[in-house]
Every structure is written in C-alpha cells, then in structure tokens.
Length: 345
Ligand SMILES: NC(=O)c1ccc[n+]([C@@H]2O[C@H](COP(=O)([O-])OP(=O)(O)OC[C@H]3O[C@@H](n4cnc5c(N)ncnc54)[C@H](O)[C@@H]3O)[C@@H](O)[C@H]2O)c1
Image (cartoon, rainbow, N blue to C red; front, side, top):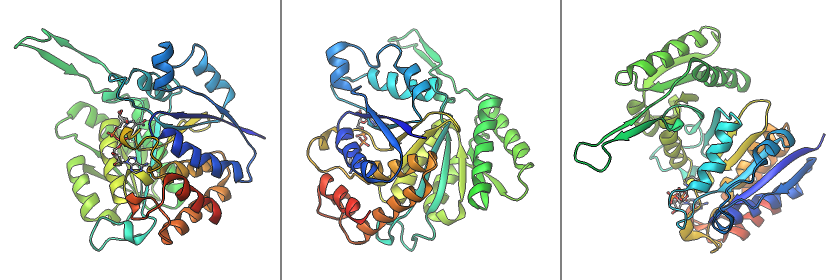
C-alpha cells in the first residue's frame, strides 16, 4: 500500500536539506506519495496563519508520516509559527516517543580521545509530550522587584509508563542489553518518585534486559567519559532535550543527527535535530546528512528496512571517502554532498 508523506521544508536551511533528502527518497524503491506544505515563516508573516484550519486533522487522517526540515526565523522572535506547527504536532498528534539514535558513523568523527564506533552506539528515548514543555505556570507581580515566576514540570503515570515501556520493548526487539533511566529524583522528588517506581515496575516485566538508574548530572559525565556503558537511555522531556544534543556532539555534530517524533502505529514526524541555522541559509553550506538519515529513519518506521539500511551504508561510504560538507572536514556544498550519497545509493 502506498505510504503518504507530508513534506514540510520550513525555514532557513530546512528547504536545502529537505531537497537533498527528497532526491534520495525519489530514487529509492518504495511506494511513497509526497505532498508538499509551504508552512514557514514567510507564509506566516504574509498571512498571519501558521497552519491553516483543518490542517492538523488532514495530517492525522490522511498521512503516514511527516518529513520536516527546521523552523526558526529571526523575523519571528517569539517562534509563534514554529510552536504552532512543531509543538502543535507533537502534542496534538500525541507523538510521545522522541527517538534519537546516537551512532558514530566514522572513527574520525569521534570527539572523544580513544573512543570509536564500537563505543558510541546508543539510543536515547526522550518523553515528548509532558514535563516542562506543557507550558503550565505563570508570573506574579511581573516587572517588579517582587516578581515571582512558577514553571511546572508535569509527569503522568500514563505518560511515564508508555515511554519507559517503549524503551524496554525497543531494547528487546533490537537485541540491546540494557536500559538506563535518568532523572534527578534527589531534587525533583515527586515526579522523580513516579519515574523511578514506574521504571522498576516495567523493568520487572523485561527480565531479559538489564536496567539501571543514573542521575542526569552523572549521565552527562559518563556519556563523555564512557559512552560504551549505554545501550538505551530513557529520560524526561527537559533532560532529553539536553542529553540528545550531547549525543549529537558524540556522533559528529548537529549536521548528522536524525530524530523521530513517534506515536507507534500512527502518523509520526521525522526531522533532523538541527534548527534552521539562519546564517547558513541559502548558501549551500549546510550538511544534508541529518536530513538524509532522517529520511532513512522514516522509511524504517514505514516498514522499508532494507531501503533504510542501504541509505545508511551510502552515507557511511560518502563519509569514508571524505565527500562531505565542511563541518565534517570535507569541501563540498549541500547539493554536492547529497549527490555523493545518491551516487553510492
Ligand atoms: N526542530 C527545530 O526546528 C529547531 C531545533 C533547534 C533550533 N531551532 C531554531 O533554529 C534557529 C537557529 O537556532 P540555533 O542557531 O540555536 O540552532 P541550529 O541547529 O540552527 O544551529 C546551531 C549551529 O549548528 C550548526 N549546524 C546546525 N545545522 C547544521 C547543518 N545541517 N550543517 C552544518 N552545521 C549545522 C551551525 O554551526 C549552526 O550555527 C532558532 O530560531 C531556533 O529556535 C529549531
């Protein structure tokens, strides 16, 4: 059956990297149908509309996946359009799994002395619909010397359990040995207590998978000191936001990192983890690998596993040959780096 994909290139370098990804998707032998949506800062500034009425329901009912570039434009300082579209989809489509593989694709890309491809190969699952990102809180006596600001961090049993269960299920299905849950329950006692109890209860159902807990401050240290000790990491929205960028640095930088925002079995959203990098926009500088590996991840989600593996092999071969953009030490532009991968495919 044809899989329907909504393509949203977005702002800044988004259109360039999505173009590179689309050239790959157009060539791959998978039954895919694409619809382009021009939601971005230009459109928002022109019309005042970030996402037209009914668009979210259209995506929900008529598509299998969304392939997205990046959002962010200096002319929209409050990021209103990005919040409406990106956070809107995460929350309204209930995309509770943020899936972030951290895999070093070439020994030379390692930023860590003595650590290579066999050491840097882990997966982070970030809870994607709760935590500090629900935007609950407020200000009192704003603008005065007595101002108070309160920002709530929300965890629900349902939300915590489903992301932890997903991490264990993933570990079992992919032959990973262990799951590490990371939080800060020595300070955030109430939410942390819910996370820890739920973790222990779910772990008891997966006796074939090792499990351990680590405070998030210790986690950041160990990811740098001894990344080989991690297989699967599961954590909340805020800590996940931070440690996934650390993960990107371990695998060669923001230019190569892919992510999925997933509700298993339903329409899900796939995007490179970098932002719109406005200073690079339109200059043929941005690394397209993050967007291309994101396309591979989307194919895998849609059941095209062989095609996804072939794309990853082509990316690795292009990196091995040094045919990359400058952030990875090469001398190619966005287009040529994408072509180098396409040729090998
Ligand atoms: N999911 C998203 O759409 C998303 C994520 C992060 C930031 N943003 C937004 O993007 C805008 C810029 O934010 P930022 O500068 O903090 O983050 P950014 O990821 O856009 O860029 C940070 C730096 O990372 C490097 N970089 C990023 N992508 C790269 C690529 N493909 N190739 C090579 N180098 C790359 C560049 O040096 C860049 O200056 C802001 O408006 C921000 O809010 C959006």
